[in-house]
Image 1 (tube, rainbow, N blue to C red):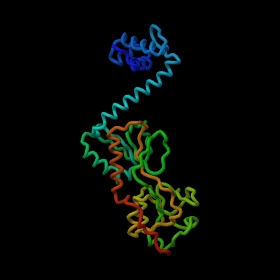
Image 2 (image 1 turned 30 degrees about the vertical axis):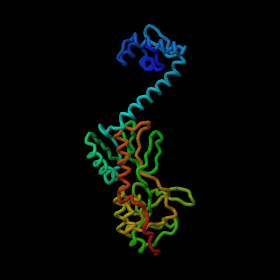
Image 3 (image 1 turned 135 degrees about the horizontal axis):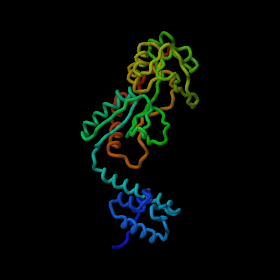
Image 4 (image 1 turned 60 degrees about the vertical axis):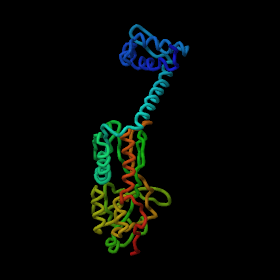
Length: 308
């Protein structure tokens, strides 16, 4: 039987990782003599010793260490290619675990997840709605939905939807207290504080945060919105809370020149070259579903208000 250039690589990797020919043979389901023969033939073809052999254990030579890293990448690439072809016609199935912030998840993500589950009944779903930033890798999650700016470089980020922050107030509030025309005027207004009293803003092309204060605070965007609609103060909220009210005139956009740069809604997953059908399919489904939500139908025709 002719020798193939790839012969012996799987056996060599198994021996290097297991530290013994017998253990490597058990992993591969072959005899120890077969493993030993394949590795010896590989060394002969390479004209290089890869392993130091003793009666009890084997160890890698310097050349063996270098060769092992390349071989492991080759194995990963081979498995990646096989999975990619197998998944071309595969439907999403199995357990899908993800996390999202509570309010956004309840309003936007979970309804789309339910639609996705109805389409693919072989899926099982576990959703952790939490305002804590969970470690995806440590928690064994397939996906995380995150809002705003990202910091974890270990993860791959897929953009699902835009996220633009608006500073606004109701016409009734502005008629009583006036409209702020500069950042310095924010200090004399009652600001409705949500989860943070640091509001992101922009001036002369530079992004910064400004501390605000007022007589009202709640870590719920929906609660902040209700207070703003009832004329209790200024608020800063993402587009999906306020766009409809800006269009109708129930809220008025303020200090547009100081609006912070747009961020986004993201799907994050661990770094890997090949996505499983369930993750890839869900990311596409979420992106398409969010694009059709009325809250994301653009920010044109929002009310900037009448000078008061």
